[in-house]
Length: 147
View: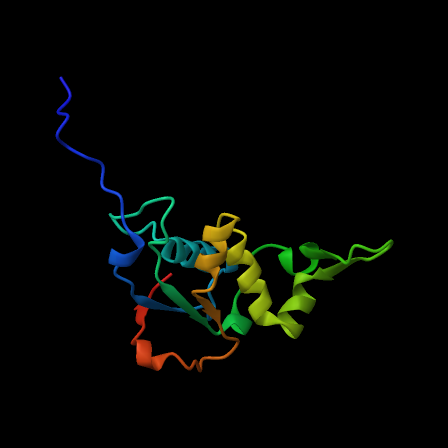
């Protein structure tokens, strides 16, 4: 017989304890960094994870310009944009994107792993990506995470 007195734990937004994590992406594989950051942002590493509540932590990613990719992705992977107008579709190769906007590559990889909607939009605001190794979040005392 099932014990009816035990209740399932549901986290509340006011009681969630938040931390700040720092991920150094230098010489790390893009997908590995993105999955680790997405897990931390979403809060899935915590025992108190609740799907409909933002239980995640803040994530700072540095050295985004020095991230590595495997295989032939530098030339074969493309990012598509569409303006909404006829012949308004543009494709940019990963190699060009890493040269021009290295932070955008990691931001896209991480945010595409987070669910869409109001909760996902709130979670994405806690992601900070920087091309170099300098960031303005030293006051938050970020905890270094190894990927």
